[in-house]
Image (cartoon, one colour):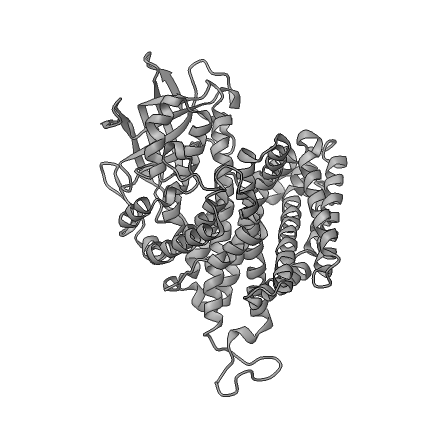
Length: 600
């Protein structure tokens, strides 16, 4: 049976020491986020994830969700009781606005809890994460009346939320949407159509499910310019807030999936269901992207979370499994074989996992802090800087984070050898659950193109120049410390590769757009390497300062420095190879006609 323990100490190190949110005490939401409160929230939420949710992960995967002939869906045994405890404890309210019943704490703290919950049980975590995204879109675009009707109970967790984009004929290309919204004459609309791949579309955890649905008005222009967003509740809500009649929305089927079996991924049928416009007509895509961007950050955290839980179980196995002898001679002569830990190739996989997960955690939590600063930074300049950086890094956190998260999960399965292929050991579930993160909320190829095609050229490259400068300054500051000088030099070189790749795209993608498409994946990974390098520099500087000050837990900080050096030696060299791949362009990639790919 796999195990999980929330990495509370590491999250506390990043939030309180590296990001040092204590210096933001004067900003809204941060006054209450004292080091003691942060420690308490992390400790208690970690216990909830590890003790309540993690034990349900493997059995939930095996039981799956069950759809009755009437269209109702039962989640796996234990999920309902765990969700009721989630609601009673107020975990879903952490970073939500106080005006609607939230605690108003910083998003960076909510991101940490999201990682814990997802590592423990990704399928379970998705029910509340979809709600969080729906709340964000409604906070930004819904009328005051809709907000008052739905948000308090969505934020409390009594009701849940979904996002309904995909249809059988369209996934990424939302301009092909056919779902229709016809005015009823009373301010509501009749929504008719079919949506597929709807996570948490129907379940038994909450009293109501609030669907956010993309649809077209009768006179809407074609393409993405003609999409509107609607709130479509499972049960209609009366003026007094009480639940009324069942709406004409139903689950037609549950998808049979490779992973996340404990989450109900539904085909949703809308048969003239009553819906209410969110925001302006034909501006639904902009409203939905508020939810999508939040979801993409959440999916990046899912990649980290699956890597973390797989890593923990890889370490546990390497500490108990004996196979062969150390290359330098028997490490434990009194035993018939040495532990897996003595083998460099096992160490390679474990160190890769450690360097990625700790670096990625820092990047994800920095993303959470940037999301806070976009809203509450004291000056317009600081809010703009946070927005630029968050926009640039969102596709990197999602794309690079899930690519590497999946790689890490499979490497940890490899540590287990043949036993990693056996269901009851749990490693193969981590791999299957991690795989979806590279696909949904915009496949990673889409993330790469978003980075290269939209984020990179936006505002004359303002965001990427800001990022370059941050990395350069951090490298320069670290060079004076002998413990960090080698890492600083390596990250500086990787940043130079990123600058060169950026220049190449500027010079070659305009004349041939396929060059951008051919190199986008590589560019996203170079950016990911540099971004994690920036995080390791910041963590390294924090660790050296703590050691120099004589802080306790010296072994913790020394391990940070060793892992930082490992990242520099083993990750940053890939930036140069990736740049050379990018600069190969699209010529040979696009040269063969489609029929040349046929195998028979």
